[in-house]
Length: 361
Image (cartoon, rainbow, N blue to C red; front, top):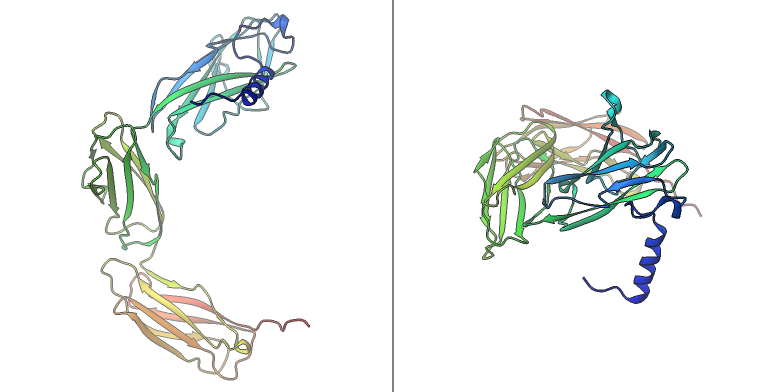
């Protein structure tokens, strides 16, 4: 760690002097705004945490004054990686546990009463490797200055996984779109990923990333068919390092295998836009798709010209819709496409015929 420059150090010590101390080394009579609260330990040092794991510790708080000490808030903890809980050993039942809030509390500690404030640090909440964590937990009181409880932890980070969340986007139920995860060593250069070839229908392939012995590439392949809707699949793969698995999730929105776009066709005849096209394709692995018919349903007597063109044999098609002569905006119609897919036999896409207003002079 580089030494602080004199101006920076002076500013830091000056700022620290304004904060109330967390320990009991300052006598209340010398600092009338500091609550008569004893805190042990003055600084809580959590056990060393393997990255991806959690550890916790406790502060013991005691009211050393002659009157009740009212706590009005505890926190915030600074991030969602830290969770605090408060216990009162001298009380029983529901009164023995108090919900921790950063404001709105009204907990009166009787003279001599002790409270135990536990804090848990969960490194799974981090979005990037962190090897050391130091923070403070403020406690607010009624009629007194707040007290900042300091805690810290060393975090063991043997390797880094990227990404933690594999985003597959919108995929077909039988598309089998693969996801890729990279694992690279940080503190451990000799480890193995002990992954099976299949988990819950998902296929996994683990291989070294080039000639680097400290880097791996993991490919995940979805099952032959996924349920429609939102997908969140969590993976935890053991490694040769005890109690240090590789963790990641796969996220996707699963839709029917036949997809189309755009969601709406726009025609503007006075601007020269008298045709619009729709693409229809199957994303299923090895799937086949044919369009059986395509027509326009409109409140007009004119026949709408529609033609079907192949984009990819047996998989993807283009449907082109033309505006018949004599049809004036504004008008709404519907393109109806019939396919041979049993799950998506009919596709309806709205058509809007309109013109932009003339520019003002």
